[in-house]
Image (cartoon, rainbow, N blue to C red; front, side, top):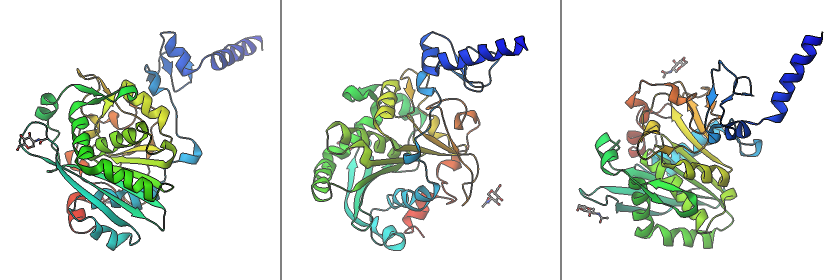
Length: 329
Ligand SMILES: *[C@@H]1O[C@H](CO)[C@@H](O)[C@H](O)[C@H]1NC(C)=O
Ligand SMILES: *[C@H]1O[C@@H](CO)[C@H](O)[C@@H](O)[C@@H]1NC(C)=O
């Protein structure tokens, strides 16, 4: 009796007096399985405060149907120079406003990045979507090594240099004027910012930049990326997570791209929230895991063996590029 009273007392003391953040501040690890500080042995050890377990609040919940039906369509449409065909086939109220194809390689050979904007007066939605560089995966080890280093996004932290340059080439190549025009015309619309692969990194940077310059409010933005590589450093992830209430990074099974550039490399990159991991073939009705850690070891990072084909196969479409080029049918 006395033993159990004391035991329960100790447990409740540990629970009320320590949060994950406070525990890490004191130099110890947080054990997420039992929600206790310094508990050992522990399966889910948390050592970075951004990985303290947190999920989006209910009003910004992940919706598989929305991402599968709408966001996925916008990212596939970006594989076409004429994205309107995809909307004509699948979302007839959406009108493409502008497309941008800009050489986005600072040092040759020429490599173009593609983005488009669209508006939908029925859904009251604006869309900004990035394709990334031509050719499925340009993020080879050589490019990552060659374009190492980070560039500052001011108070928002630091961005991997190659992604930073890619975004600002497009921004300065006309996207800036376009976003100001859309804001002027449809200022009260919700803004979906989307992209796949490198395009996912550019989407993340675009959302940050649009908020930083005061053009769009974070609460009006839905940022959803597919197979996004690590984009910025820990400071960027911290700012991002404090700024955007609605931000999801969808990861398919063993897609290798979300695991590069490496977290521990010289650039010390770190993912922002919230990873949605489909550890399956993503057919309709598939389960998914919302990751409580920003960039922890317990969701897609658990898979050490990569499957490159998973990068082009999202939501049960075998090859997003072919599907997009065919008009999303
Ligand atoms: C996807 O996975 C489910 C569950 O494992 C399986 O029943 C289904 O046949 C798979 N579909 C395809 C297209 O591989
Ligand atoms: C893109 O094209 C290559 C090859 O022509 C050049 O070497 C780059 O300097 C160019 N980049 C930009 C930003 O113009």
